[in-house]
Amino acid sequence: LMQIINTISLRKIFGDIFAKQRTIILYFGIGVSAAVIDYAIFLVLFNIFHLLSVFATALSVGSATVYAFALNAKYNFKVRDRFLLRFISYSTVSFVGMLFSMGFLYALNVRAGFDGNIVKLFSLPMIFVLQYSLNKAISFKKLA
Image (cartoon, rainbow, N blue to C red; front, side, top):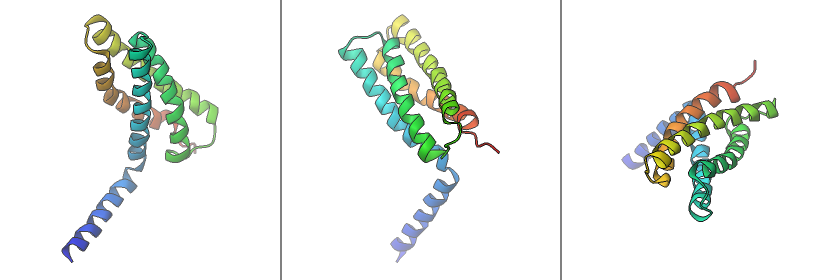
């Protein structure tokens, strides 16, 4: 009986958390999958095709941006209006994130010699926070 009560309580707690924090949880999930796509493309371009890390990240981020925008617009923020303008805004935010990522790669991989794979991986959480904040406030803002 206690196990059933605990299970019901946990469902309610997690349900309440999800309801209150739905957009950030979905943004995180979409962001994680986009980061996997970004990182996988980066690894292929950097390690197999031997592109410079900053060029590989430009291509990988671009691919992940299109993917993440489509999912966020449709399933997370559920916006259908001003689609092109929102995509441009989202892409601009992604571009800002990419510049930060490229800056980290340039400073820590190209200049300081740290492993580009590790630098890219550790830059992702900082970029996530920056982009979520900007996209929620600008790209997916509901119009009155």
